[in-house]
Length: 154
Image (cartoon, rainbow, N blue to C red):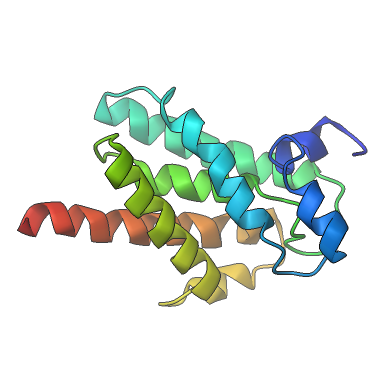
């Protein structure tokens, strides 16, 4: 890693292992690992709803900033996984912090991040740090909405 921004963007280096093995292919599994990195950090996000929203929004801006400073080559390099962390924070924001909800959010977020349905792919096509992060944020929001709907009809 060339600098501290690379360390943060790579999920503390977690994304470097699969990309080293699989030679910078787009689908390396690094996104899965980046999402795993986010899970323990959910427990330090403040519990009050307003604080969750502010913290998640602040992290989105932080992720864009870190991504813009990272030195990994190419648009949406698979070594950058801080966007998965931001997306997962969106997926669990304002939801109960139970393992079943967190697992459901994890699975749904990973599916939406991979498939990029409902116009999410258009966000992925933005060729800057915002595009890297916003497609994951949109996938997280979509997962969150579906889980919120489940709780409403349950």
